Length: 316
Image (cartoon, rainbow, N blue to C red; front, side):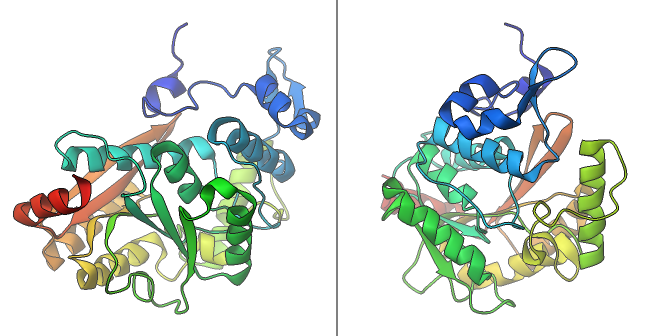
């Protein structure tokens, strides 16, 4: 079978190559079948502008591929596209492998911190399912925290492997979360993209317009995501700059800091911020899902000798 363009663009280890097998997924989650239809080409399809259908698709994927028993999010919270989220985890795993002389790092000895895990808890679920990592998610929003904790509670296989910590100060990213005795091999983050509520609303309307092929007068509040998930003052650039500045205080407690960067035009400024704080090394890791190109930035303050010591003490 020839690979599609989507197949070639995803990470080779990504389980979601090619089109979704909606027939199999509907058997996994019969509720999904009510939203599946035959399109004009005679293929099974889904209305991706329907928030209920997208949520059920995510639930089916998590059950089918990742052994999740329960997954749900409150209305109005961000429903993430799982193939793209899985790509970030796979490429981050490659980053750790490269730092470990080419040997994959799996299992509970690997400690990962997800900044802003959200109500969906998607990165901790994937990181644990794919690589067995112990993942801590930090979150500000009380409703999101309650949702994430319920997901953990209803999935016994996550007990003791995934936890959620409350960030009590919206001005902090790592502070209040990373304690003096903590060491994290990796931090991940999907920062707020927009710089204002108006920009976030217009972006969600454009997304829905593209999906529905018609103008959107009123945003579906069940689809777009919460304010803290979508926007912050200065948008993703200022959020990442703040993250870089705050990472200095934890330079010896984290091997790789990483963050998604949605806008390629922000990379130059981000690189400038990294050089300014004196990181030892940074990388831009390209990713792609279909026609959408993305990337994440990774940086470390550890010298080669410190990295070797870290490898011996934590990874051997």
